Image 1 (cartoon, one colour):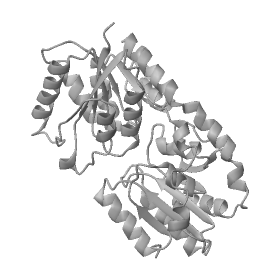
Image 2 (cartoon, one colour; image 1 turned 90 degrees about the vertical axis):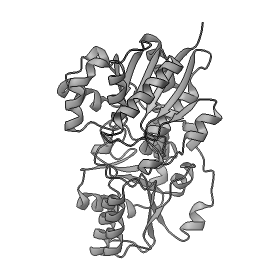
Image 3 (cartoon, helix red, strand yellow; image 1 turned 180 degrees about the horizontal axis):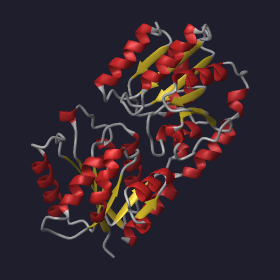
Length: 376
């Protein structure tokens, strides 16, 4: 049999969790049964990097980078570029990931050309406007993929998506990649003599709200509860100048320049995770966050917002702790409690963390997508 041609449309190939999941999926597909190709909508013109392009190219997966802006003047050109990719590749299935691409691939079904089946998905959460869009547009999707049960419930209850069209496929993780550090000396180089190190692996963007971590650490300092041997890293791409400005303002206002450090994104996320004693993800909304799964695979418990735990990955006191979303005082309280634990408490949580991460293994995710591609 000829391999099934899968055209994956994604907003960008920058260094985010949705991109990492997509690249892992495509590299894991059985290439005797599936022939993938990728179209990336946004790029440098929107200030986005190409972090995952080399990975796809090295795996022999063709990548078309449109580098379009999300502006009404460019939408016809973006749609035409997708139409051209469709005519050239002639996919049996288009797998569209993220809101912008979902709009365009659904519109693509209205244009003449080779027929295809359409899977649409996002890997975060839906806000009220996006749910309204789904109510009107979901009829043009053959299947809608959710990576969390909470997302599926939203689409069913508030967007009216029939349950038969909804498919829940949890994120997948290459657990072995995070089993050990590729840079064991990282902590000694960057944070020598620090008894406690908390790490936030997150893009500098509104969704991840890294400034709230700085505000919570500042509150600890105001309470005289910030240990002199504690440090925090925020590791990720700078996607939002406004969020970065809020973060830097909070750091300066609380005089945290030597306590909260903002580090660039890395293609070896296991290194800062293994350097950490625990991690923090205080997002305002999430699906199933890769940063939390990766933290658990590295054996590090996580402090998460309730929004970041919508998929209930973290069990309170077992793999970490859950704090009310946006509640800086509650985050400060939890940081205070974790920083006060004895030296054996956090390492003792590592087996439960790794066991939980193992429930989200990459081969299972790939197999479920392969079955769905074949089904549609």
